[in-house]
Length: 55
Image (tube, rainbow, N blue to C red; front, top):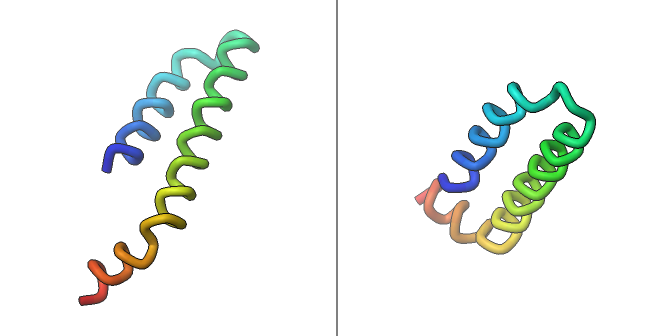
């Protein structure tokens, strides 16, 4: 849930920051970090997530 909220926050922040090139680089870096953390979370906790969803 925290990762999803972070993605939404980065998206909303990015809507107002895309005017400058450096702000766009920061935004895409934050997107990349958020997606990477989500993927790592799924890899590490995948078995528990599947067990919880399909009890």
